[in-house]
Length: 336
Image 1 (cartoon, rainbow, N blue to C red):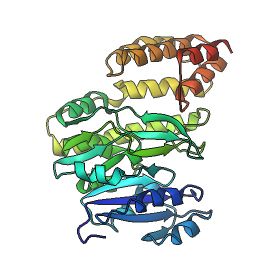
Image 2 (image 1 turned 180 degrees about the vertical axis):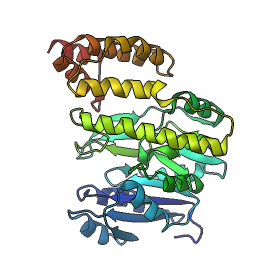
Image 3 (image 1 turned 90 degrees about the vertical axis):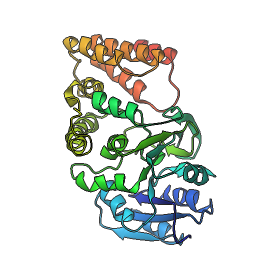
């Protein structure tokens, strides 16, 4: 490895014995001497450490702390100016490291790329998660964050952060994950560079913490809402330091909060309140989704407000499922 690596890949693993070798090899097999790799076993209780330790990669075994602290531990074992936190159940595609490194310069706070969704056995479920356009910008994304609290961003493994952006994770003691405040603080620290090429794979296997691949769960939706509220409070403080005078939206007035609350009502066995529907639809109209997506979401919100909870649960499960969805599938959920 070079004495001056350009990129560090930190792989954190908790009980992913089945997948972690593929994650590690997806980096090592690219043979880049300008990329350093560190693996952190976050107190796994399965055979993950045995798999990791036989691969000859710099690796550390720590007590279980959660992904954020495991990734910070790994960050402190690296020195490259840019960092990719690769989940141990995900993979990078061949040649991806070269593409990533070629796009990095000191003005980039975050580089992002979509991921291909695959199943537990590596079969493709769908591409471009999420679908991203190619651009380099900071001002537009700042405005989106100030207005909505979010912008379109891939999961953890589809992001590369400048090292100083990663340092904000040390303040996020309310969060156990990495793909939180640093995503949305990044435009206030530099450019966001986005490409449309899928450089990695996001694995859906039923145990994803995101909930993809299984029935919607009220406790995880409630956790997402509380995490969003805490993140917004932290983000407000960061913006106050970096962009004094710019005002962040009240999180309870955002589309994200209202949409998550709507889904939580359904998952909790309640019918969402009809009086909340006009405000939700108004927020939806102001989002930068495609017209097709807006129509589909509006139909979901309307039907979820009017149908019995059993039907609402089916609609919610279909909306959150991984892979291909269609209007026909939506109708089948309604009449099934």
